[in-house]
Length: 150
Image (cartoon, rainbow, N blue to C red; front, side):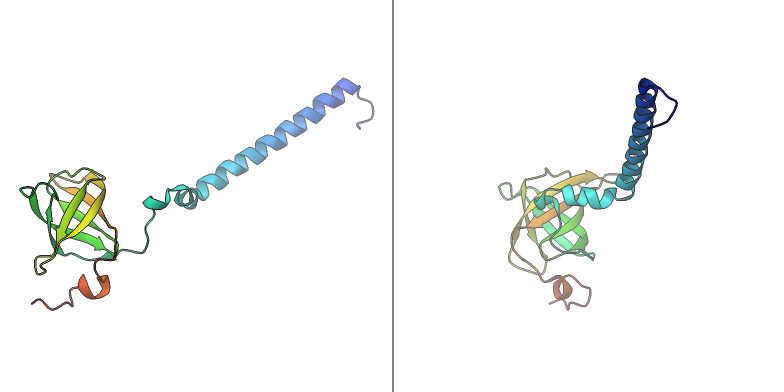
């Protein structure tokens, strides 16, 4: 150890050095966590909160209605879409985890979707996430503006 110091003084120096090095390591870990926080949070998300595929920006008109309440009806537009989901801007607040029937105006069949979130936007609008249990639409051909209307 250090020559000329008593055993208690050497122990104090050793504890000081260990404490200092521990603080340096802790500060480095904090900086690392902050620099990697998005990837860490994405890894910690529940599997049902993670997207299955990328969204495609598209504005498509939809008809929304409550599955058990046909009187609740609204025409809304998507912001982005995928084969398993969509982000829709609506005028009314919908409840997360409820079901909603989604119909494209030019199609006959409705599809059931789960509401994953409903967040207030500016004014009287809400952003609503829809999750389809099955692949309902092929976004590259169905949700693009290249689609011919019938």
